[in-house]
Length: 77
Image (cartoon, rainbow, N blue to C red):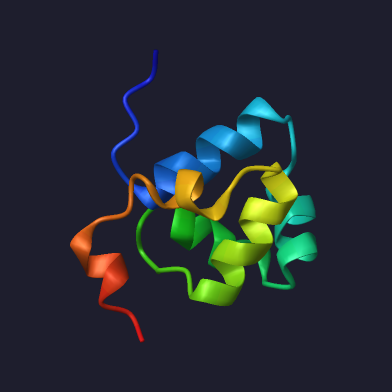
């Protein structure tokens, strides 16, 4: 089993598990693919609206998606 320790790693893992290209996930979430790439690399952080969209896309509860969130992500307003 893969060790997933960041929100970005979780998103990448789910995206690859469902065999979704980054551009399709970004289009669903209404963001630029480069933004999603930065989120996956933990260079940018997701807001609550984006987290909701990703949970919907991956068909998981928001809390399940948030389980790997670090303190830094919770501090985003």
